[in-house]
Image (cartoon, rainbow, N blue to C red):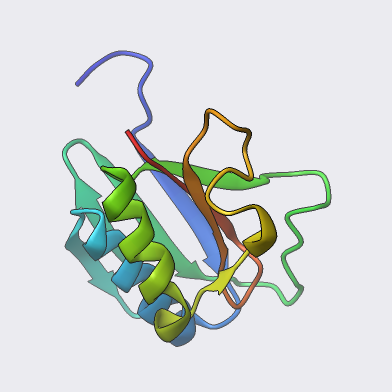
Length: 128
């Protein structure tokens, strides 16, 4: 463990099955392994960090544009790795964001893919 690094991230979802399909694909493609499974949740681990999806106990929609978490950004490997994820994302429950500016939506020196799942959780996949 390294003091100050993230221990885990927990996301609440309105549709655990749909979220598990999308996030399971993405996290698996990034090297995370299934870690825990219980009635209302799932988790994937990479090193000391794990990501949790859990069924939300209250109704309501997530909106990344409101106060709160905007997105998660992952190191995603080479530019070719990022492009493969970009190409495969729609078939795995993700919508491409900023297609007109891909892969430089974050600026001319920042190669990344931006995706959004069915509940509007956004991820940024950053190339080395």
